[in-house]
Image (cartoon, rainbow, N blue to C red; front, side, top):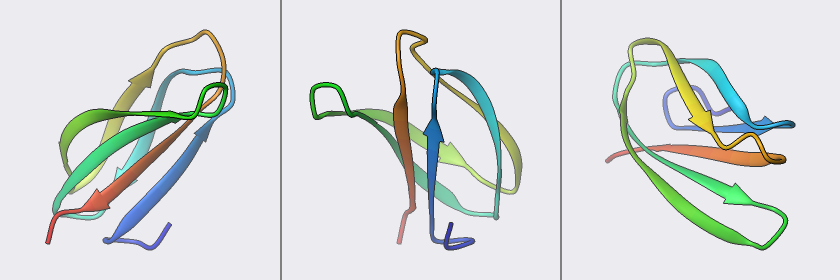
Length: 68
């Protein structure tokens, strides 16, 4: 993580997880390493612990980038 700017989370088996985000607004996306696709997860508001979810069929990488 680059606190307050960007966060990368590896979800080894998918599912739900929590992340403690600094205050701000973030664009979230998930990357599927099995086929190389990236999917938007929409906007996330920081300022505390947030729960995010990805499918449970395999691993994913979630990327959150702070809006300018």
